[in-house]
Amino acid sequence: MSNQTNTTEPSKTTGQYHSLKGTVVESIGDLTGAQTWTKSGREEHAQGEAEYNAAQAKGYLDGTADRITGKMDAVTGAITGDKQQEMSGNIRHDKGQAQQELNKPSA
Image (cartoon, rainbow, N blue to C red; front, side, top):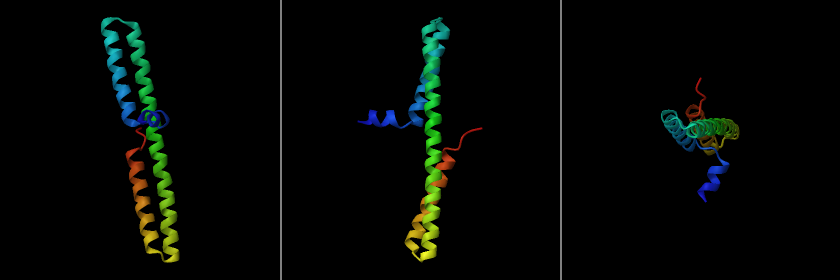
């Protein structure tokens, strides 16, 4: 069941694993002169990097959505006097902000 989730959702962990594995395979190919290993490793590394970047972008966008929704809930709660809604909105906003920080693209 977890394989279905991994194929539809990009994963930073899986991306890092394949990037590292590809680098190792490519290095073995370079050292031994096995061009198929070099090519295979290079391709797996590129795929791993692409998956990592996709997961990072998704995490950043999810954080953005949480920040916006949280801010809307907090403002609505403040206007209507619903302290519970205001507080949960602020919590969601802060969670989204933290998620954005974790997934901020590196320059």
